[in-house]
Length: 314
Ligand code: GAR
Image (tube, rainbow, N blue to C red; front, side):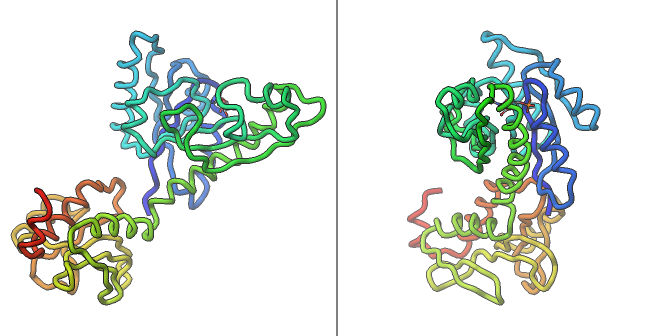
């Protein structure tokens, strides 16, 4: 399975970035760090990432007036590096709403408190002040509301009687380094397993009028109301190791043209004869799900009876 491409955004020391990076070098880690960047070109963590051979982009520090420019440049740098997920690791800026929207569900953050307690700053001092028995850290998905998105994992850290904000922060940081790589790995795995891909294909296929799910030769597949098949889901069929959908094209000419155009994505499926069915791989590094949805819909159109075609607006 290809590894998820992750960018880490930092503002300072970058010890969580280092924890993510070193964890990514362990066998079987499902993500790789393809870029480290942030809002402070002199952040010590950037020099560390560079020394470790990771690509670093030093964007100029921004003031409120060039904020839009900064996030535009950041977005382009992330896209150029083929980034799929953004991990905030001590990135001490509030991301603008339109940036979060572009990366919805693909930004995670580590925060030094047991959320929903103590959003924002001075989390350790606030935990001590409140005489909490335990402090800790959380990894969560970033949404428009500050430190508020779904929590992916937490680790508790005992507060000692003589703790200061600094001594407590030091132990919470150790907990962050354990939690973050694990929570990120689990998160990227959620949509990379064949089961998760099938769930996504199912959601697309079953939204089409008259769609029904059935099984054929051990493959989950989708047909139009008791009639013709329009999409098969194949996972390691006959030991080929491939995860893909098999959908209809307009015929052998289009099939040949697509394979010629992008042989890494398209293939001629075995056992389907010369009928124009095509395999579209779901196990390439950057699956384009909009394109997958289009191919499934086109295939459905090729077999759907006239009365169902009328239901859907094209
Ligand atoms: C970490 O403790 C992280 O949880 C915190 O900044 C520190 C960065 O340390 N982040 C926040 O407070 C974000 N709200 P690091 O640069 O060594 O990873």
